[in-house]
Image (cartoon, rainbow, N blue to C red; front, side, top):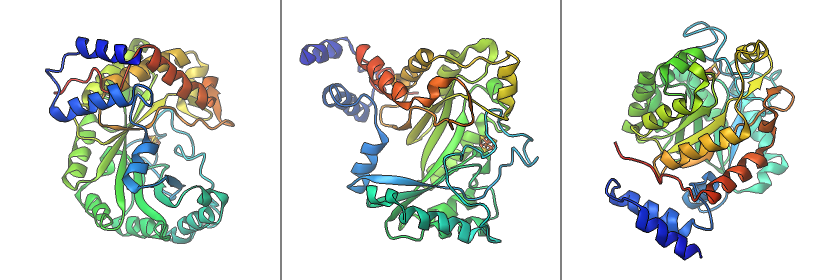
Length: 349
Ligand code: SF4
């Protein structure tokens, strides 16, 4: 039966718009992934890249954000928690030296002393919360160096805002590439500028385009972070997602993180939620929108995430966000039932 379904899909499909490379990816999806996976999973990609299971070590680099200290804005993005999305990182902030070196190194040492280090042989150090390129070049180097202290570390991944990437920072990151895999995670959240204003992100689509082009120039991988279900005009979150996917497909990015928008305590979004000005989307709506993203995004992009990681003690709504399995299994089921694959509706610009 699967072969009949494959043949049927082949007969219906219009290949005219795909390049040769994407036709190969399409066939890979259609034939190999028929019973295995319907989008490019990060774990598999890392295993192929490094030859074995490779895990991330999340690091709190004690950064802040220009959208909090007044340089670009105050209060931060309306969904951003007090820890700048770093609730899951265990770091001891009483132990911070002047230049943060010990504070950062200790997180890595603690990780390698824990049971977690037994789960793989290779690791990527991931500077996760706040804006991890927002400091002087000298301090950035000190911070990154202080994390790269174990032979089992093979990569350095840096999460940041698009307006905090410039040539000097790209050169600094590139300087690590002889020894480490380097990757920059850029927040975008939405390509709808109106929504961008509503969420107070305080950077523009143009900032994103500039950052991607600088990172492309230095051959540094880019992972982009987008959110489904953000507050937007007329609550039309699907239109928002369509604009965002279309925009992303015009950029050379290598990875994608898809998050649902959720409300955590002590945020501007909580105020909007409590006064009835924001309603989170349902799990079904999220799965449908997520499937839209996957089927329309470039087929060769690696999908790093398809769910958020809501902190249980801070989550206000929606509660389905706490059930990662509902999201992962729900999406697999939705894709399978509707015969959907990553990139199947992708159109090259
Ligand atoms: S740019 Fe990132 S760290 Fe800064 S406020 Fe927005 S989500 Fe938080």
